[in-house]
Image 1 (cartoon, rainbow, N blue to C red):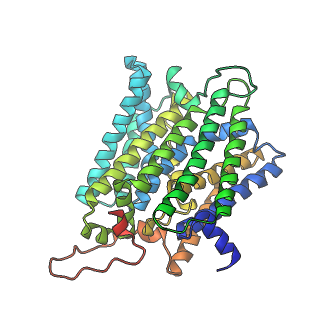
Image 2: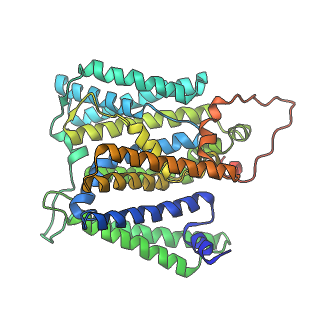
Image 3: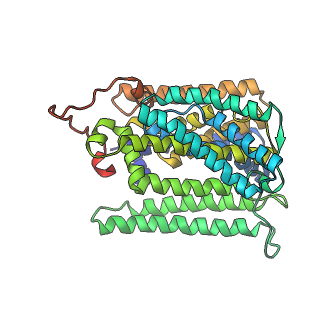
Length: 432
C-alpha cells in the first residue's frame, strides 16, 4: 500500500465510496480556491457564502431524498414539478382562505406525502418502473401547477417567507457577530470532537484497531478549522443577515437522515435493496415497503424544497421547479454514490451539491453567461457518469447499472431452485 493510499484509508476509510468522496472533497476545495482567485476574493466573502446557502439549500434538500431513491435502484424525475405543485397549493391556500402560514407548511407536507404515496403505489405495488411513473408525474404535476395558478404569480405573506428568506435574529450583546450563529458554531465544534472520540472508544471496546492517533488529530483539526471558518463567515455578514433559516433546516435534515441511513434498520434495508434486491428479499427485507418509502419520502422533501423556494422568492409562479430534478440527480452522482453497492452517503451528496453550487456561483461572479454555465455543468455531469462507466468496466460499482435494473426482467426465485449466494460486499447480513 502506497503512502497516499495509507493516508486516504486512515483519514477517510478504505471503502470504494470513501475513496470517491475523498476525491470529491478535494475537488470542492480546489473549485473554491480557484474561484476565490478568479473572482478577486469574492467567493469566500460572508455575503456570497450566505447567498450560496440561501440560493441552493432547496437543491441540497432534494439531493438528500434523491440519494435514497437512487440507492434503492430507482430515479425520480418529478421532484421539480411536485415542488412547484405544492408551492402553488400552499400559496393559494394562504391567499384565498387566509390559512395561517404554520398550517400552510403542514398542508404542503401532507400534500407531498399524498403525492409520494400515489407514486410509491405504482412503483412498489403495481410494478411500473419509477422512471415511467415519475416521468408521468412530471407532466401531471407541472400541468396541475399551471391549472391551479392559472399560470400567474401568487404572492405569499411575510411570516411564510421566514423559512426561505429568514436569518437567525440578533440577540445578546454587540460582539460584531451574530451571537446565535457563534453559539451554533461552538455546538458544531463540540459535536465534531465528541463524534471522533466516540468512534475511537467504540472501536476499542469492540476489540478493533482504531485509526492512528495522528489521523484522528488531523481530522479533528481540519473539521474544527472548517467549522470555525464557516461560523465566522456566516456570523460576520452585514447587519440583519447571518446563517439562513433554510440552512438550519438543511443541517437538521442532513443530521437526521445521516443517522437514519447509517444506523436505523430501515436505512440499512435501503442499502441492502440497492446492493442486491433479490438477496435482500430472501433475507427478509420487505421490498415493497422500501420502494414505497423512498418514493414517498422523496415527494415530502420535494414539497419542503418547493415551499422554501417560494418563501425565498416571496411568490409562487409557473416556472418554479424547472430542471430541479437534474440538479438533484447531478449532486448525487457527482457526490460519489456507488448505487449498486449501496455505498452512497448523505454527506457525499451534499458535497456533490456544493460542488455544483459553487461552480454555478463562481461562474456567475465571473460574468459567464447562462448558456455557458449550462454547458459546463453538463460536462461536469458527463465526466462523473463517465467515471462510473469506467468503474463498471473495472468490476467496481456502477450507477448506470443500478438505474437500468428496474427495466430488466427478473424471475422470482422458485421454492425448489437453489438460491444464489450473496455476492461478497453485498452487506445484506449487516443491513437486515
